[in-house]
Image (cartoon, rainbow, N blue to C red):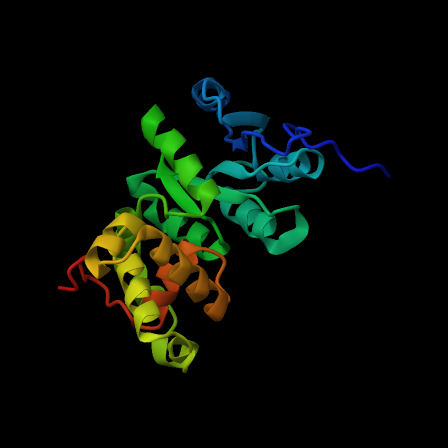
Length: 241
């Protein structure tokens, strides 16, 4: 069986961010596609109407980012996300969950399933483009303040910190713990650099070491980990209050 041809690959190795759109509403997909295809560094490589179809598409077409709705027929976005990040697909691609304020519980479940971030369905074109670029680069969590708000709301459902990760934080240096704390409170790399009087490159280096030491996939998982271990308490703001 021959290897599938990945859309967008070029001889020089440079290519746009490949995006798969997954939503059961065709008009929504059409709108997203129109916005994204207008960007020189983003390419829509496929569409799917539900989670099961998305998995089928990913077997033939490689994507860097999957823009995933939550509530869909046959297979919802949470189960599809879980399967995508399981390692069964090349990459695997990052998943951005589409959600609304009144469906926060779904976004929380998606983060636990391995989504790289989430975006409000009524987000403007600029926010959509920025979110895809951010998640693809791995440099930032989409809407970190919203991530924190979700975790504040659902922290009571997290496993007990003391039992879940005994000694896990001991693997980090004092500075790495400090960076993790600030990430969990919703600060960007630039804000963390300003707070700690270091360069953004230094913050990225610390973040990479944190993920490696703790066996985490991305910054979203790092935020969840910080809540699970009690490093950040529910209700704390960016100043720790």
